[in-house]
Each structure stands twice: as structure tokens, then as C-alpha cells.
Length: 133
Image (cartoon, rainbow, N blue to C red; front, side, top):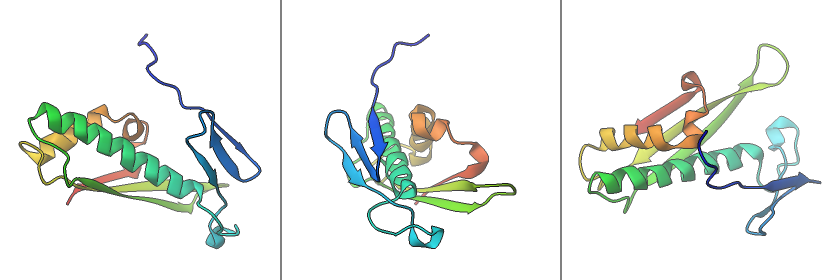
């Protein structure tokens, strides 16, 4: 078994998510289209931010190993909820990657980054669409 490198701990209570180190404290609520108040951020925005930032860090690692950089790079992330066949929802994830200075074939760097990124690896491939801009 691999050694644990880092554990993030966040407590969610009464509409606020707070990390144990105090770096994160965010009020959240469901979007108004889902019968929430629409005030603050929502879980879908937090998931989109987590996916985008994790993939961008993985792109940095992959681009550096290819002799490039992530200067000017970015990830636009979308999380789309749909009605499920049963109770609840299903989610689809779309990531659009801009990688101007990959240090080689941008597509290869992106594929390496996807193999590194722990968050994209946990999402069912059928629900994940990643495009290079």
C-alpha cells in the first residue's frame, strides 16, 4: 500500500464548509433552480473548482517533465446535474484545457496529466469529457 502524502479535512455544518487548518471557510447552498436559496457557492461549483485546480497542478507536473510550463494554462470546468432514472441526480463533468507552452505535444502532456490527477481518475470515464482548446 502506498504511503499517504496529504489528507484534507473539511467539516460541513449549518451551510458552511471549513477546513481544519482555517484556509477554507465558505458558505454554501443549493442553486435556486434546485430549490436552494442560491446564496453563496454550491457543491457543484466547489467540485468544478476542485477538478480544475487538481488537473492544472497535474498539467504543471506533466508539462515540466516534458520541458514545458503551464504559463498561460487554464482549465474551464463544468459540472452539470441531470435527473437520475431513480431518486437523486447524475453528474457530468466537462473540462476545457488551454495549454499554450506544453513543451511538446500538448495532447500527450494532457494525457499524462489525466493519468496523474487523482480527481479525474475517480470519475467514471463516461461522465468525463476533457477537451484541449
